[in-house]
Length: 415
Image 1 (cartoon, rainbow, N blue to C red):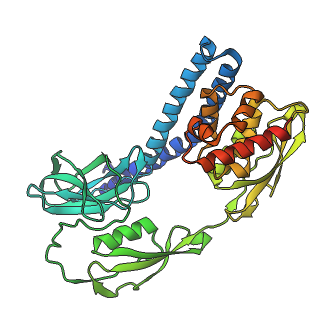
Image 2 (image 1 turned 135 degrees about the vertical axis):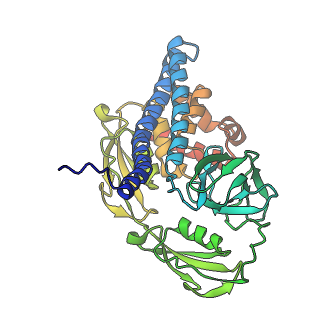
């Protein structure tokens, strides 16, 4: 006779609890795959809008339509970046003994790490707290029942956020909250300054942090009333982001509030991306993504591949220190290079790196200023330092001087 009993209850519950983390991973993977596509489309639209304004004028309907598309795409990219940060916050498992409160703390769309988020009872008493990690995520278990509100504190005890929502805490329930700050918080995580400690002893044991992610180690220290001390980095590719050792060691009894020094593994070498065949803006974006810079640019006359990377050194896939640059050979026309190519070469030039202006900002300002031919670029290169500083919104005269120097050289090399 067939077994008509239902599925094993424990197994069914395990499968159910695994659905949320699996969904989180799928959501994160999907958004992560979409990010470079949207960013690439945004760069393409910005360049098309620049070309249309240079060719037809800013008042032409075709140029205005492309400018509107570019602005809308920039908004989409900003929203996707914010959602990507949110998707990195994993869903915690529910607890039969407590309410689980979790979420993310951000400011202007950027995650805020090292802050203390606490759940407060009706009289302001601390019923649970957690500290935000590198993606602004926090999680805490709140025992008992009754309404609680959320509060965010900085390391000096300053209240950065005081929620008014009454969250109905009850064992087994899980609540997510997205907290947005209006003031810049400090970046060191400690327990709430007004937490009396609930009668805990004056000394605590150092938890075992070896092998744990650095953000998790900081949360564990805060949970027992300790704080991170000196931070030292060592080259350990297989343990990058993890605590290699700490002092005092695990299980050492220390006074509450003591600092624990952490030694964290890092991966110093990075892989050189494949740049040959890419347009200069795409090559610049790839280098920025890996943290590498350009060490030098060789100009090669090639009318068919002008504005493309023809060679690179080191080759793609080579692992190098992040301080090492990548030398590029770039195709240029036999005649004078057009303004867009000149600006591409300026933005990629290693001497442009100290200028506090991104490549995209350089293109945007050039478009606003109407720099659509080489003579206009030459006028900027010869203008007074203060006028260039103000026109491009640069912080100091030295930025303007560096920009002018690179622009003059690139114009001379591409005549």
